[in-house]
Length: 135
Length: 154
Image (cartoon, rainbow over all chains, first blue to last red):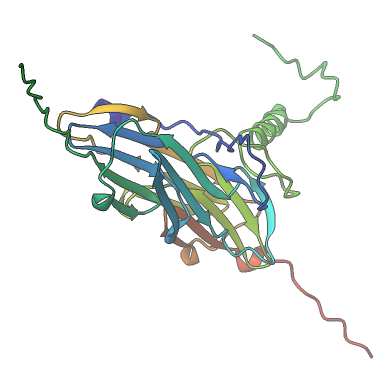
């Protein structure tokens, strides 16, 4: 496979540039995502290393999907930093969805720091023919 | 091409031209990601995976974000002062008739070598992988640890 031969390039973790002021301290990072859809569902795969299931908040309202994951940084008391190439903090990202999602059937799985979220689309309403009576 | 003449070196005569090479190699090593002897900070080396390195009296700690890997796809080797991490991050192809709206996650192979300032006990190195974060603990070799000398009062 061609994709296997590819060498991964290091990318700096992107911090969230927010227009709203945050009152809670701490850094927010933008997770890398893959989003794809077929006729039945929209699927989101997001890299959120360090987030445990209980610390992940997924919210969908008014067609806005919000992902917010809390990261508990590793215990490093008594350690002296020699090199720091990435920061740790919450993961945050929002998407505006154009499809109507069947809320009750949303599925979320979290494995080794990757979230996989399946958002099933609401079946399109059957076109209804309106009979017009003529006098 | 630069030809360096040792006879006319601004640093003065060098007994051994290889010592100059050694010096350059040391400087390059510092530039490409090994840690200086003084334990100074280095900027992001730009090699995947990015690492946070720290130490306490007994160990070095190396932490990396490697989400979505399987342990069998991560290869670690420890020798002397060196740590090599290599592996492959696989992003399985999605089947069916799909259309991508975002495609930011990257798969592929990686390899990174890191040098820590002192020798480590490779036999006692430990690694753990949880929530996509790899943590490696490298115990410092006994002979490399500073010795505490007790002064007896007479």
